[in-house]
Image (cartoon, rainbow, N blue to C red):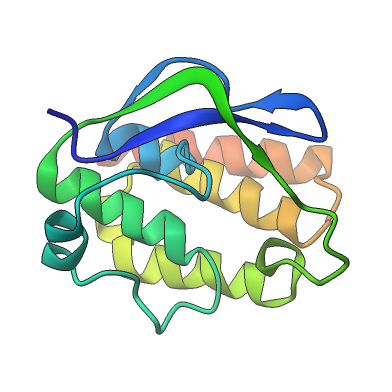
Length: 153
């Protein structure tokens, strides 16, 4: 039995996260493969303390990560079973200035579990949220740093 289940969804009639996947702590440290909706039991949700209200963004990502850490692998069903409405005219947490701080909070809370490859991916995702262009120099230095960390573990 999986501790949580997510289904693919449709956003503006385009399938998103519409592939079958078994989610583990390792896969979730790279990215939030569950997006923003999951099915779980109330008991499991309460056992991990629910959402961490100290997070200004990425509350769902933190919550789902803690679920798979505590209860084991989760399943994403690739078939889109819901429509996601995003055209409500209000700012979304994921596009607010708090979004970047959410990445920092996630790193502070879970960074001790991350491998260099997780850190590299999180840094790229953080830059993307900042809408920063990634230079060739940045990529070169980040790859060099990753190689160094792997060699000196």
